[in-house]
Image (cartoon, helix red, strand yellow):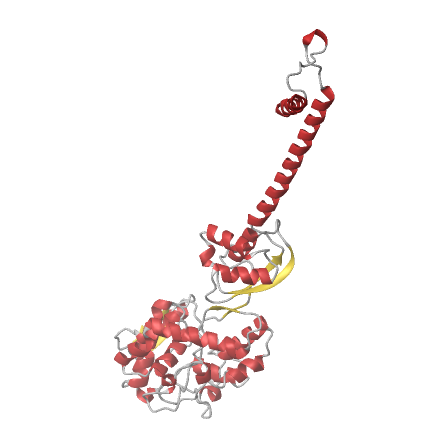
Length: 408
């Protein structure tokens, strides 16, 4: 309507300039003639102009929207890719790693998801199997996802559990199965414990016995996750680092000073305790028997243990035997450095890899005069005796309770 008036005014104005003072021809009935054609054209042109402006505005809006929007893939992704979250990585660092692997489309998309999720700070260091072309928030979910046992669902690692009381050959076999590395690789790496991180002070004794430097006793029982591609040396260094941390936590090297022992002697005792005692509450008592026999007024100062004899059989390629099956020759073999029937004191080294309870028992033994211990029931509870007569009495009790044991 506005455009129509404008056109008509312009037309009248132009005529007025050429015929000043002329009377306007009003046509029939004194009304001006209608200009339908010109009005229609004006309306059509106006619609074209408005349409063009609208189309241009929409195109410009989408361009601006695309400019400010954060690029992000829309779905769950496809394929499979392994990425590493390095130690000390920020959300931006992780985002750049994911963009490089084409897991997410942009750094900004992942950083936004990272900042919006309160759990994102708990992302653990390691390798993860993810998909490519994922929505950033879904990629974050995969980094955080856990199984019902609280383990990370998408973390890629070789998981190994070292059990209390295992010896090094057991551990090497377990590590080999989990990592597909040859047992020989672990045996070779283990020949130099100091290079793996065992401090030198461990290889000293206060009883005058020479120490054979090996890794037995230092393979701390725990569950470990090793990154893909880790070699035998790296794996053993990780285990030794955990051993050192646990010894610091227990204050082990300092705590043994009150016993007048070197840390290594206490470690040897703990390794025996781990094999001989079943229940944590009995472990300190077993350690006390070992110390009383080795360092106090016990005839021969010998421990008289089948467990040390069996350790020697195992590391020399033979099979361990039950107490009733060990022969007199095996128990009293003079060539066996772990013969504790005839050789006084603690054996030359650990006979297993002890856990926290055994280590704690070794540095906190009760103050008793016990010289004997034995399994008193089929569950494995331990009984103690200060005299041989009392020990004999308890062997009969154990036999009556169903324990396979020789009686005095």
